[in-house]
Image (tube, rainbow, N blue to C red; front, side, top):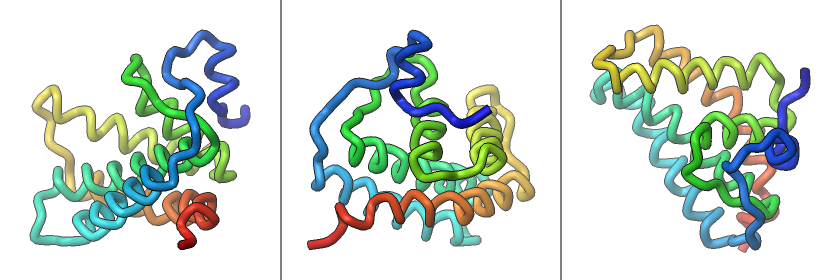
Length: 147
């Protein structure tokens, strides 16, 4: 089954997306945040949970930028992280398995709310997933990042 885009989610009753104008400043901001997060996740002096969270946040911020570039904003409705990641991956042509890996990172990241810390293996999966998905998302944004 292919990955869903915002229109697909809306047809299914989702409240996560709304149409919005393209905002180049916001796109650039999200890309800047993602660049910092990418550096944070590679810093072995950071804790495992920080590294995992930073890799995840890198992809999430790039996802928000991709969605904005397509005229969408994300609300805080239930499922907004998962649907935002999936829709951005759909736009960028990321494989279903690539999205599934990042969605697994999302689930492991959320374990912190139940007091379950991530393992080093979890952090490495997050970084591997980030390295697979981030270039595809950035490629979608190239025209918006030109001066």
